[in-house]
Image (cartoon, rainbow, N blue to C red; front, top):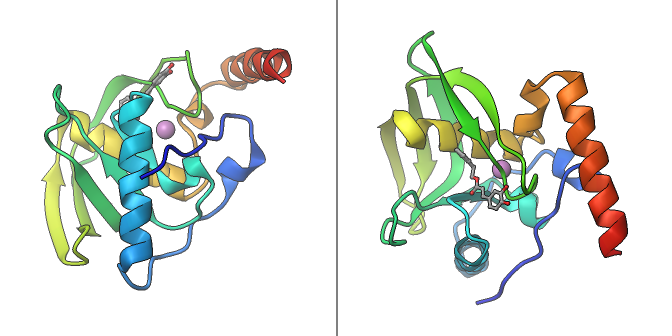
Length: 168
Ligand code: QAP
Ligand code: CO
C-alpha cells in the first residue's frame, strides 16, 4: 500500500480524459488499494484516479463515518433518472479549503465493475448521487469549480496558486 500524491487545481493534468480499464487485474487492484489509503489518510469521502495522476476510469468512495463501506467503481457509467436537481455544498481533495454549492440531477443509475471485476448496477440518491457524479466528472477532466461563475473560479485559482508558490 502507498499514499499517492494528489494533484491540485489548477494543475492541467486534472483535465486529462481517463481511459477505460480493459481488465481488472492485480495492477488495478493495487491502484484501488492505494487510492483507498490515500483517500482515508487525506481524509476524504471520494477519490478518482485522475486526482492521483493515473488516467484510468477508477473511483473509490466511502461515505460512512467509520470507513466501513468502501465502494469501488471501475468504468462507471451514469444515467440521470430525473430532471430534478439537488444542490449540495461540494468540496474536493484537489481544491482543498474551498466549498461551494453545485446543482446536479437528484437520482442517477450507475453501472460499474467492482474490485472483483464483476459488473453491478445501483440507483444513487442523496450524497451517493452527488459523490458519484462529482467523481465521474474527474474521469472526464471536469472539476466542481467548473460549475461556478468565472469570478468565483478565478478567485479560487489565484488563492491556490499563491499557496502553491509559498509551498514550493
Ligand atoms: C467529493 O470530496 C465530494 O477541501 C469528495 O481541505 C465532496 O472527499 C462529493 C476534502 C462533497 C460530494 C460532496 C476537501 C478534504 C475532501 C477539502 C472530498 C479539504 C480536505 C473532499
Ligand atoms: Co473531487
